[in-house]
Amino acid sequence: MAGIPLNTFKNINLPLTANNIVLYSTATGLTSIVLMAQATNINVNGAAQEVTFQYYRNTFNTGLTPGAEVPGNFAGNAIVIAQSAVIPPGDSLILLSGKLVLETFDFIAAQSDSIDVHFIGSVLETANQ
Image (cartoon, rainbow, N blue to C red; front, side, top):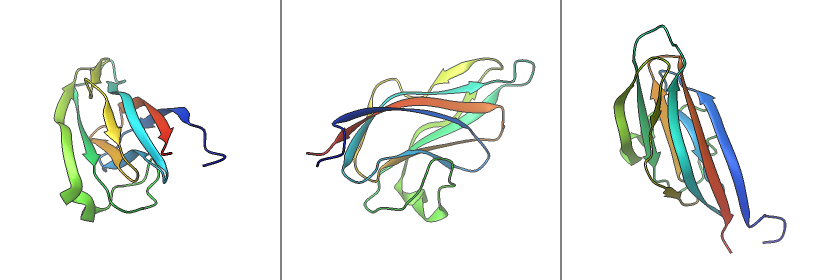
């Protein structure tokens, strides 16, 4: 597989919305390890906010990119990691206590009812050789 680096680190930084959005999707020829996933409530004077974080086991290339809304027909593929988890104002919540392996076309997604919740994560991509 010439041209594909063996290991590549990626950072994810996206504001969440009420829509369930793709945070990261594993591309063809790669296996990925989600090393860190957290959500931050950036509104220090407001109320606690909720976040839902999900993993999707996929079997085909959807072409979904970070920030895209997860189509409704994927609801049956969702594995909920955190459901309506509460984040106090000005605080962060670790959404993943260990590592999560994503195979080709798997993806992670999240949503929050507040635009004051931001997601940050890191991923290690490894070429399938």
